[in-house]
Amino acid sequence: MLNGIKIVEIAGIGPGPFCAMHLADLGADVIVVERSDVAAGGKNLVANPLNRGKRSVVADLKTPEGRETVLKLVESADALIEGMRPGVMERLGLGPQECQNRNPGLVYGRMTGWGQNGPMASAAGHDNNYIALSGALHHCGNAGEAPSSPITLIGDIGGGALYLTIGLLAGIFGARQSGKGSVVDAAIVDGTAHMMQLMMYLEGKGLLREQRGKSMHDGSHFYGTYRCADDHYISLGSLEPQFYAVLLEKLGLQDDPNFTRQWDMSGWPKQRALLAELFASHKRDHWCELLEGTDVCFAPVLSPREASQHRHMSERNVYFERDGLLQAHPAPRFDGQVVTPGAISSPGADTAQILAALANNDLAKVWHL
Image 1: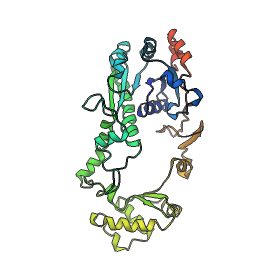
Image 2 (image 1 turned 45 degrees about the vertical axis):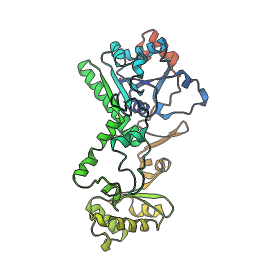
Image 3 (image 1 turned 120 degrees about the vertical axis):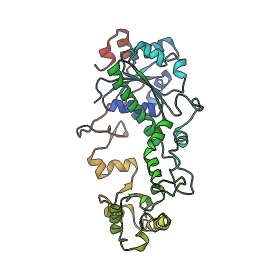
Image 4 (image 1 turned 120 degrees about the horizontal axis):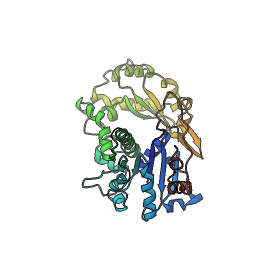
């Protein structure tokens, strides 16, 4: 779907490479500029699935030759992705001004945790720090316990990579209309705060409280996870009354007075304890056989490896294995087609070809034209 879109990625970690991979998955032509010390790792490097579908060139950005390689690439690119701390690319002579002097229509994508400005812009940080400051971490976890960081999905990927992706695509769309590029400031604190809009709507309805463990999503008995007899877990999401009624019927609790008042929050702790005891009395497979595929709003809690073998995920061909790694197929799908992404590139594998093409100004060999 993105055939003809040309992206230069300055190699980094986390959300920037994920964004570039996502664009490559959807058909964009991505060239990643790697450091020479990374490429020197050779056979000792672990294959990085975030580099699938990309081509790789090595350049030392601290040298005039390395900087010129990047500037030559951006001359014919639609966008650049970088994830340095604010000011680093400017000090290298590769900031937005220098790049857009070469290509006024370039969309310059900047991926950071704190953003390009503000008192903390230059400080180090990681996913859990960013979502802590934005408010997104506050409701993750159980009452009376420390908040539990949901790995890097909310921050690095949700509020970071995916917001940079939509920002770049919007910028490219605008540049093709106006001929003028833009600078996309994709900050994880911004994206994760924006993702909280639905939760803030629930706060207005009285369904989200400041104290963790007292709200619909983290304190009710009908929405959450439960341990089974085999130490596996299942999830419930029986929010709507009609789905809650199916849950009670399936569990044989439709006439139990303890469960008649679904939205009486004062009864939630007892109701949750009763369901915890019930679910702990059988293995996960028992509850899957009873509840899966019904309107209870139910699913087992699976590891990625388990998920790849589940009948629903398997039929939809969500996961695949290649290069010794479990990977997920590109998403979303268009016209129902499952796209097989490109192979994982080795750092520096395309350096000679790309540098020769740049020297000859042969854009057809620089990009997939």
